[in-house]
Length: 458
Image (cartoon, rainbow, N blue to C red; front, top):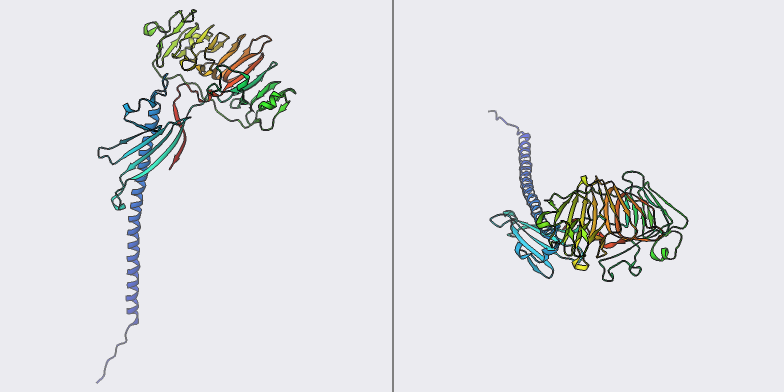
């Protein structure tokens, strides 16, 4: 009998082991894929909630800005600090806050705080959204935004221009002071001088040239990157000790050619402009409280008023009255012989003119009784291309007319004080002027609206 034998095939064991290994690898890969997919799904969901909470926080910032700008353009524009309750805000220790819900279930909401600082308000908003159930916590997801605010700054120098500034004449000087300081006596004086009487010119239109002549500039001088500074041997530019000692030349650090700014065009506000004969004759002619006759008298104590002027007649603005006028293009040259803004201190009247006419001529008879430049301001649209001061006396006021050529003449042999600030396209001076820049103008804007100046996510 023959016994049959069969050889074992070693490959079968190898195949089985290999199959097990492959299956294990595939199982691990599949498990990893499912895990990564789950993690990615959670990550995307959290990212969406994270972004949503930022959107909710931004809504709180918008609410805060709307709150502090509630009285923009009105005489009592800071009255938001007194009327918080009517908008459901709360108040304690100079901080205002409110919580608002964005859905009926009250799962999405923000809490916004407004801190009324000594300069400009700060706003902090935290947005809350419900967290995902898999997060294992009942606490909502939140993000916080902190912003600082500011008002648009029109006046940052004693004299600013896009193009050439030519300071012809003798005995020309600049300096600065602050009409909002506690030591201000109610008028400019040597005792409150400071060295911020800057004269600057940009080169947005052409290469800028600043001819300082023999001026004594207590402040900085700047031109654009391709600008030129020309001056004579007797010029003195620098800090007060430098200038007061008549030190010739430029003090180190007081000249730079790196100015690069843009002067925004003036846009006439989109409001309901009233004729000056409305409201029972408001803005009509007659005898004003000072006993003089004016073509337009504003004596109604109103919290802001916008009126259209179609002529160049004399104007009287009474105490506690804030008047904004639009001078139409058809007027041609806006040249009131007398523009008087009455009142001092907290009772000062305020006058703002949007000059949409080709030219503006001002003189000695145009003045605010308060001696505060911010109480009489002229804003020129692109249609306004000429600005002239032709007076034999001092002037207090501010002009922002980036398309206008500013010409200063008159004064004879005497020195004229120009208190305030000017922003124009070019400057041509003939006469003896001392420019005194009012630092309080840094916080002036047509409507004092607050905008975000700094933004930080906490």
